[in-house]
Length: 533
Image (cartoon, rainbow, N blue to C red; front, side, top):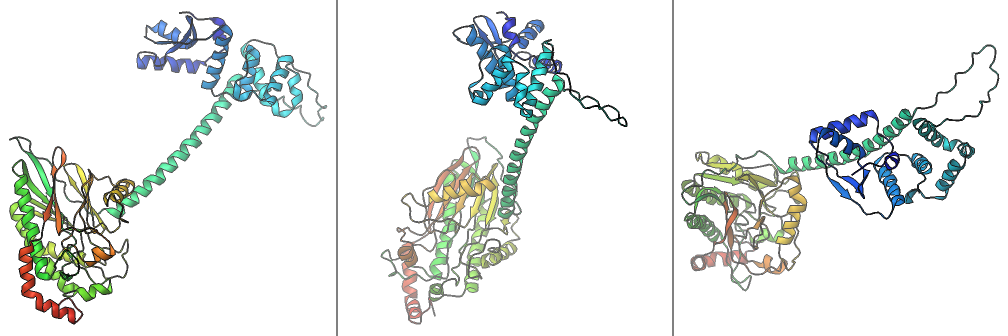
């Protein structure tokens, strides 16, 4: 491998500072990172790297390119170098003229070709173009000084100086280093302006994400951590949401073809069966896992409230009485869970029904929710249970860290579903990945609201309802039949979601007996236009 002096002369030489920087880079890396470009054993690109690596004993690599002849090699060197240097178009034209090479395609315009011909024919002739070629004249003179070519100047024509004024000092012509520095400063200014625009865009995105996090989060619960792996079992945490109880709503068995019945007595029975089902599923999982922790998300709509006129007609009791009824049922269940788990975490999210306002607000949704008041009351009456931790945020979204991954809890009323054939999982995944995950990434997402239980995706689980199939689900939502159910989810400390079970909360035979005992009361209530007299 050799260096052709004619080829090397086609390349504008590096300054002393650039050579020192190149040498320092080679010593730091211990090798030449970029390969040398070689044609038929002659170096086309990397002359300085080749000399320094040879001098310092550093390794380098080569890349052979195929060119037809020496003229093509000269043209390749020229175009490759001007692509790597911050050269102005006038400098490129000057280099092409002096080295007898063709202009690059992107500069091959009529005006540039005319400039090149003027420079090639007579260095002085190009001055007739006017002041627009001043930078070209500077570049031409800079190149001539670097190559030892005499610069011929026309005699200056100046008017005789006035007697009272000293003669004007001739303007100093820029040196090659100053011209090169000016071009470098201009290129660096462009790069800094571009980086400034990019940083401003990133700052705006970061501010938006920070505002979203502030709205969606509140005081954090201590994370659930992995404790042991031995004994053939791993730690796991049970997650079982409770939602859509609608305790005071009366459902007559003839409201739908599936003969679902719902009264206060049946609501109490189903909530008791829910907590028993959680223990049943946990004992099943404990055959293969250490299940010491339970996450019991309360996801809202425990009462129906009075947001619609029909809700008033089907209510067996008022909202406050319904809340006290639900609170007693949940307190009983929480105490049972506390006796069977080492730790019970209760994330609390409000629904869209039990509110005191006509419309569901955004920042005011929690403050105007009756369920939020019930959650605080439950936290107080269970304060004697040290292993029960309540998380009651002022946001409609809550988070809990389970084995290093965040779990996201919300009621689900913010999801829009229009009956797509693939189910609610599609809009849920879309809203999660394109919306909430950009504020805070969650590995598990739990919600309810839609009174149906869909097949879980890797990140999303939707719980069913306690009230079950009613006239609203059939006539308004046109939803398929689904029995009253909730869901049990098991999070493996090593492998994530590992067990998913539906929890059947309805006992048809026991509920029918309750209905037969209370039929007359409810039938009379229907005649009076209320759920129960």
